[in-house]
Image (cartoon, rainbow, N blue to C red):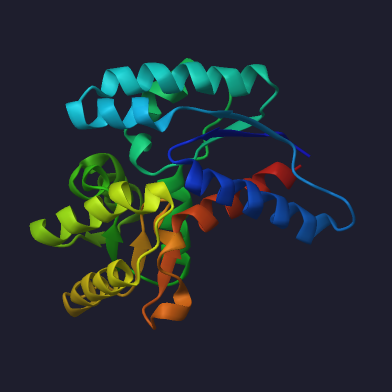
Amino acid sequence: MKTIGLLGGMSWESTKTYYHLINEGIKDRLGGLHSAKIAMVSVDFHEIEQRQHKGDWAGTASILIDAARGTEAAGADFLLICTNTMHKVAPQIEQAIGIPLLHIADATAQHVRDAGIETVGLLGTSFTMEQAFYKGRMADAYSLNVLVPDKADRDLVDSIIYKELCQGKIEATSRNEYLRIMQALVDRGAEGIILGCTEIGSLVQQEHTDIPLFDTTAIHAEAAVVEALRE
């Protein structure tokens, strides 16, 4: 079994889900007392969030490169960045380490394509919804048509992520707003919705809607399990 490198803490609310899902996945496949081999470095999200909103992406990259090197030094065979937004600096991290990076957008886009979907809605932080590092990768490499909410709804989705979900707050009113926004994307042609922030799955699950959902945390964790057990 390979050792999975986890770059966590962004936020720790979703990192704990990664840890749980990965270990459950290994146990399901191998049985008995098996669990995953994991080397994790968890950062202080406050330091990351402050730099995000100042546009200091070089600063965030520096913090995450140091953390990624820590997972490699601890024996990780490959790396997961346990957040969608910080894949903005994935190229810098990849260049700074000697182990492969399992990119969350690749795992998710392949899952969407395997479901036979070509047009998909995307919810996430404003950075993820508005910038090309994520949806552009999906369009260019996987020929997906990615739709995002209008500006007012993007701001609302982003605010709920940072002010509620990253702090472990789950509000029914926020879930209803997300479901409304998802339906608006479907009305524009989306055949499914990517939960493109690792915390959104704590708020909205498939049981809440008939719209096909693609939970990036679950998909990324599953991809890690597959890679860890690959010969």
